[in-house]
Length: 161
Image 1 (cartoon, rainbow, N blue to C red):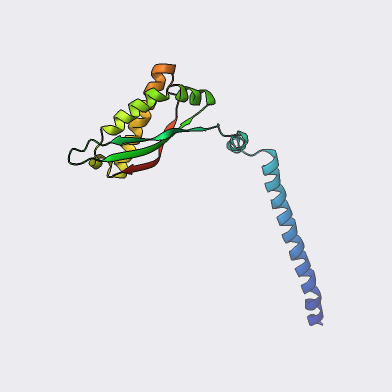
Image 2: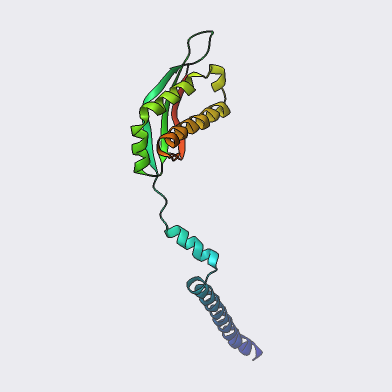
């Protein structure tokens, strides 16, 4: 007889265990869902507001044609060809770049022509030249428009031989 009561109680105990487990999961899910929908922290709200804000527009402007200059090496003729692209925050800055293109190109040709092959061997050398080219373009735009205008300058191609 004790076998029957044990057998009879076992399904009831299993059923109660399942019911308790389901109740716990529902309560935990409800609490988590309430937290999600009702009041996450301010940091969560700031993140969602930032996610809804579209990124600022970036205007790329390739300076065409590529720059080709003689390098300053004295032992033999060497050349540098550089394709330059800049980024601007607005179409108005791109228009200013186009308007002052001859002056900007002149400054960059002079800058690039001061280098030797040894000045362009390492990545850090090229990055330094890139920073100097950015400063030159920003200086021209500041002189002519009162604002540095561009955000960054990239070498999309650089060949030295």
